[in-house]
Image (tube, rainbow, N blue to C red; front, side, top):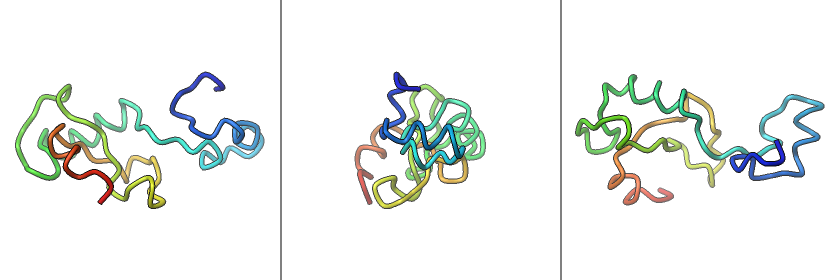
Amino acid sequence: MLGDEDATKKAGIYEYLLTGDERALSIRAFDRRDAQAAYERQGHKCALCGEEFEFGAMQADHIVPWSKGGKTTPDNCQTLCRDCNLRKSNK
């Protein structure tokens, strides 16, 4: 866990191990499984522009931004094409 780059709050590892509360780790990145599920749910289309893309061209993104309290959970995951994700930023 200490080497996991997705856990941005290393000090929370002990709290997570004791409580199981993932918020203690401040995990920001979606895993491939969640990204793939969002991609399938969206019908292989970008959530913003609606164009169809291969999975490898999509980026997993928070619907409610992580910086604004959005959780890294499957229900807060969407996939966007690279251009839309760059334009979206933190909105």
